[in-house]
Image 1 (spheres, rainbow, N blue to C red):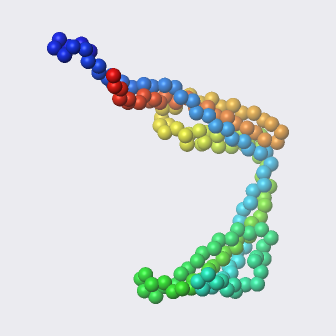
Image 2 (cartoon, rainbow, N blue to C red):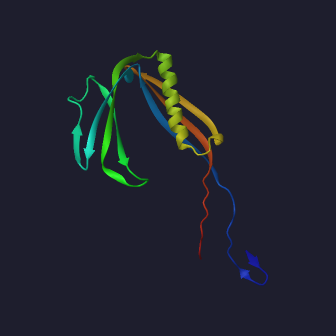
Length: 164
């Protein structure tokens, strides 16, 4: 910028720079899957922990072939912040069972697309600025693979200080 009394001086410009940015991700779903789920069977076992020494009140680990164990330690206290040097540990074992899930080709496609869309949309900050979405689904031996590409309008401009 050239002024009458100041001569030439350099000034910065203010503006917004927008660009189309693409985000993509893939997901695959097997047509036949094995899923583990809990049954109604539960067993509880207990131990006492004195400092670093543990006394178990059970003989074997679990009656279940497969189980999910949750350990909860309860410290005993006398006053509001005075804890005794021992605690009771409660083990809760939930029996687990394998279940076979078989998806149809259409179900597997829909599930793969949904998983890939969720992955892509977790990367995008402003989901309202999505301009276009492209979905590609391929079937391979025993599985379905989906790729989702989202085109997003984003402000990519940055403010920079320059010196001459």
